[in-house]
Length: 89
Image 1: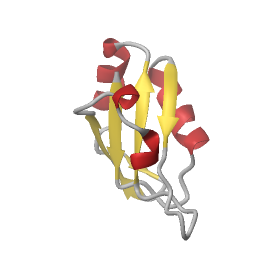
Image 2: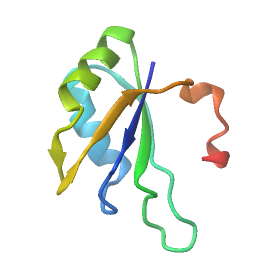
Image 3: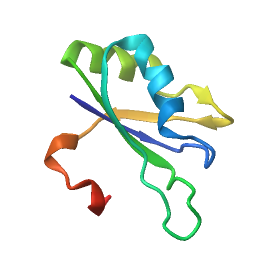
């Protein structure tokens, strides 16, 4: 079960996201694509949760919250993280 997060602060790292998503269940994987030139994140991420119920809970609770100075856009991903080559993100 994957969640797509947009409007991230450029300071966000994978461990930051894992910490907030752990409140809603088991986090299987976090991927925060970075800009190859700057090393900063590209403003979005994908988090994979263990179950659909955990995913739904996280999306409902985190959608629209202010975090690290930004209002997050949080939605269920249209495709699963495991189906995507991470090098293409």
